[in-house]
Image 1: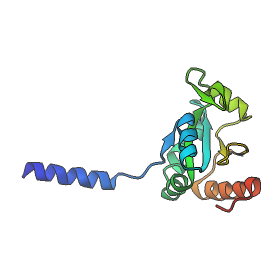
Image 2 (image 1 turned 180 degrees about the vertical axis):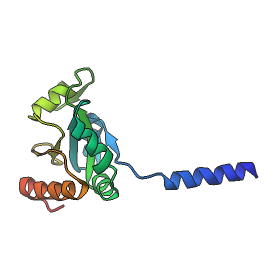
Image 3 (image 1 turned 90 degrees about the vertical axis):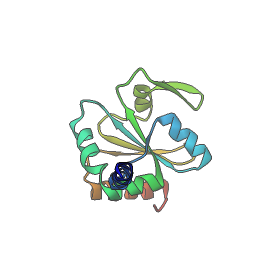
Image 4 (image 1 turned 90 degrees about the horizontal axis):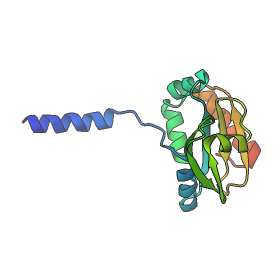
Amino acid sequence: MKILNTLLLLVLFIHASPAQIKWMKFEEAIAANEQDPKMILVDVYTDWCGWCKKMDKETFTDPQVINHLNQNFYAVKLNAEDTNRTFQFMGKTYNEAQMAAAMRVRSYPNFVIIEPKLQNIAQLPGYRKPEDFLAGLDDLIKKAFGIKP
């Protein structure tokens, strides 16, 4: 009986656990995009950025934001000050700080959207509440890429 109760609690815990954004490393998103093309959303942050932490706590825990990002994007976390972790992109080696600089990110948080062919990017800078983040993201995609999300 104890085993049955333990299994039941485990199943309830798994189903009661809130959904999360499926964050990837930059190179994982590029590889996934090769198999199933989607836009890539890169959350460029720093460890000291208070607004970045507020986005993580308030916006990126919102069920609508989680669902929208998981369905329509490969979501990437990129630390704009990390010079240790390196990866390959388009025949060059980058660390996370170099990639943030290559994407011309100068403020945090900043969300870089890369279209599926990896040729064009657009930025959505600054903290946003869940509704404002989704609206801003959709508006940016329409204007920058001519895509209706």
